[in-house]
Amino acid sequence: MAAGSARYVRYILFAFFVLAVFYFISNSGTIEPPIKLPAGSATDETPAKGKSPTTGGTTVGSTGGSSNAGTKDELRVGPNLDPAEFPMPMSPADPGWDDLSGVREGPRMNATFVTLARNGDIWEIARSIRQVEDRFNRRYNYDWVFLNDKPFDAAFKKLTTSLVSGKTFYGEIPKEHWSFPPHIDQDKAKKVREDMAQRKIIYGDSISYRHMCRFESGFFFHQPLMLNYDYYWRVEPSVELFCDIHYDPFRVMHEGGKKYSFVLSLYEYVETIPTLWESVKKFIKNHPEHIVPGNSMGFLSDDGGDSYNHCHFWSNFEIGSLRWLRSQAYTDYFESLDQDGGFFYERWGDAPVHSIAAALMLKKEEIHFFNDIAYYHVPFTHCPTGDKIRQQLKCHCNPKDNFDWKGYSCTSRYFEINGLEKPEGWENQQD
Ligand SMILES: Nc1nc2c(ncn2[C@@H]2O[C@H](COP(=O)(O)OP(=O)(O)OP(=O)(O)O)[C@@H](O)[C@H]2O)c(=O)[nH]1
Ligand SMILES: *[C@@H]1O[C@H](CO)[C@@H](O)[C@H](O)[C@H]1NC(C)=O
Ligand SMILES: [Mg+2]
Image (cartoon, rainbow, N blue to C red):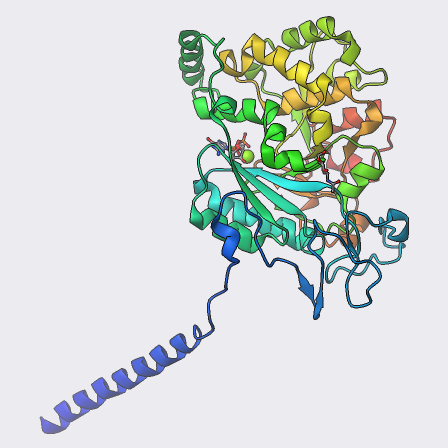
């Protein structure tokens, strides 16, 4: 008996010892101090301080500041550098292609990332930011503007500021950019939502989704924080980037004279835009001066503009010119559409609204397809066609998922109207 209980006590002591060791080991892992965040990070519209990136002991001038070009110890980064001195590596044969480490020297464009999000989107946007940083921005340190119809909370600002290598800014959208304009008949709009709910049209019963689409169509580029830039790159929560981006897409836009760009295109859900084309035709009639010769009408219409084929560029990814969106032409276009009320009497999306504007009011050559930016937003993937390019860019997308050449994509049409040759292997990806 005594021997039995002694053994029992030994077991207990042993178990206690094991637990104590575990406790010690698991705690010793958290002895390091937590990451310190910049003091200014929780204040509205304040750039995070002390974010000058350092690489191997060398300090880089803030991306927005002047670059003391010439000093040996400093990387030459900034807005006023001569692009000719810093050629971009566009393919593996170009010098500098293999250098993906550290901050890249060279000019920076007057550009920012922009994200519209709710506080509740925090983890989904964190995922997107991390991929954009890993594949591109950690070497370029562009700013990031966050917009919300409500104030961003401290947790959102803290996490996003810690993830973005450039400066972060947080803006609250004014009521007049996120509400029903006075000319909208509330009863009529309500009936539409009830009807769409019954017909199970996606987001058909949502008021906030409509405010979001109208905001992205007509107001994001007018926000005070956005007035500081000429180019934007839109990033949504839960998107993915699958390939390394070796060059600066903002520079490709600027130096190539591009005003709008896309990676995915498709047909719009007709039920959401039954009268959009009528409204566009009215605008064309009233403002023929804004319709540009050499436009992309062939992308939108199979009968010279009589009817809309519902093709559009998918706007959850966009790199574009803010100057263009702030132009008289785009302003007149948005105001005309907004007067017709389809953001509320139907459920017009910002994707067809932007796409139609780009296709009619820009020259064909001003719209760019970024084949080498591999991208996913549920449920579609753009994965570059061709084994070689995917290997060169260290892509992790499955080529089978590439949507470009499938029946519901409009990208073939874009290639045809621009006389572009489709990449080798496209035939094998048609379904
Ligand atoms: N602040 C704010 N942002 C919103 C609201 N609704 C949508 N957004 C943002 O607007 C963008 C588009 O909204 P999504 O819900 O992604 O719409 P979607 O891409 O058509 O549909 P999903 O397939 O659900 O992604 C995202 O960046 C959202 O975070 C809202 O009510 N308030
Ligand atoms: C960036 O663009 C904005 C808007 O066009 C302009 O006001 C600002 O002066 C530009 N900044 C630089 C450094 O060029
Ligand atoms: Mg989305």
